[in-house]
View (tube, rainbow, N blue to C red):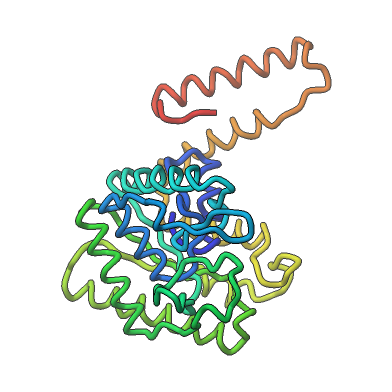
Length: 297
């Protein structure tokens, strides 16, 4: 799961049901160029050094990563970046599906280096140039992302989606323009893929579901921008109906039952009834883990 914060919403659902998945090792990445940089660095096993980080507001940061990776220790940050490069490499190598969520077509270029950054880390805006990627530029980035992934893993299914989270700080008109560029570029890429038969790549319409099916504000969080749990659940059900097989859905029901059992709090933990409940729960876990030994509760 790579990209905008919506990928983490679906990633949390996958994690709950014990699918093997990795979510944004470099934190949330909002635009296509940031995702391309991560994929390229991961496949090539880039080694981060002191030249790749900088000090700002009492912390060390990387322009390639979200601020959640930032740290007060330079060595700790560099170590974490290199560790996560390997994690991403291994995940891409083994992945059955790579799900990429694009959030915005707006990018910030650091004037000093002329490099487009993944995150500005609260550096003053006057040190950046802001511009929007064209449909053609995004299309070319998507081509590069797919080509790089296939160098490592030719069998992975790549699923693109556009985040339904609106970037209203850019402006209402600018946000719509941004989403339009992303959607147009993805469909241009997918149409070209069908012609060239390069591999399995698909589009999941999470943006359209939110905008057209869930257009009432009761499906939004308090900020009126992010989908609330009800909307996330609705889109998850749509995602599941397309990408999860009937057989796997049965396994998910078993996992769900165990998860709810683990969350259960007894009035009397020493009662005979509760001890029997725990025995039954442990037996369900044992049977499931006999088939799926990677599952841990």
